[in-house]
Length: 211
Ligand SMILES: CSC[C@@H](O)[C@@H](O)C(=O)COP(=O)(O)O
Ligand SMILES: [Zn+2]
Picture 1: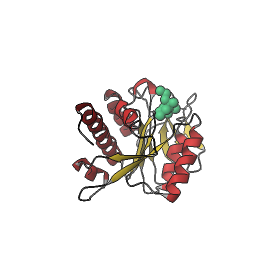
Picture 2 (picture 1 turned 120 degrees about the vertical axis):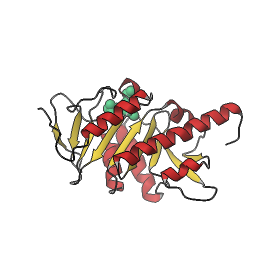
Picture 3 (picture 1 turned 60 degrees about the vertical axis):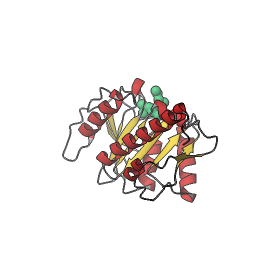
Picture 4 (picture 1 turned 180 degrees about the vertical axis):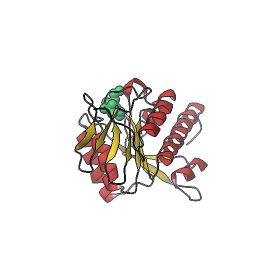
């Protein structure tokens, strides 16, 4: 089936964003997945196993809010991490985009602590993530990277029910990170801001600067 773009179809924007993330080295070797939610609560998500640098319109699957496939081209299956996107849209219904990337620095910083929280340095860049405080104390949740993605989603749901995240982002140890936002542009900015913060942390440690 050929899936034609329609008005308010986010797929072309997701294709451009995925190409940009791929060029940054954040989605190499088919890694990562992007989704965008529509007004009716369904969301377009990247198909599984596609090179994110050269996505086509047919490399997306439309998922209903309850997780059913509403539309897809033949021979594509939704991202293996669809359950996490679905959960994000359920927990944060104002979100219109959810992006997941694998950057080297996100994996390095996920090993800086043994616990389940990463303290981010009090950089000005935190304002871009919505943290407007003098000397901000901002902690990012870390989740274990289970082989079963459903287990990662269950862990996220359980933890966020008790402790909502300070920022719209989560880290999966030795895997990558996921952000969500109320627009596609804001989600891209969150990815860039966190990448900057993680690169800063790695560079600071290399220089022996206390973070
Ligand atoms: C390099 S494969 C990585 C995958 O296992 C997964 O973590 C990922 O981010 C991409 O999975 P996908 O099913 O293509 O959305
Ligand atoms: Zn992943």
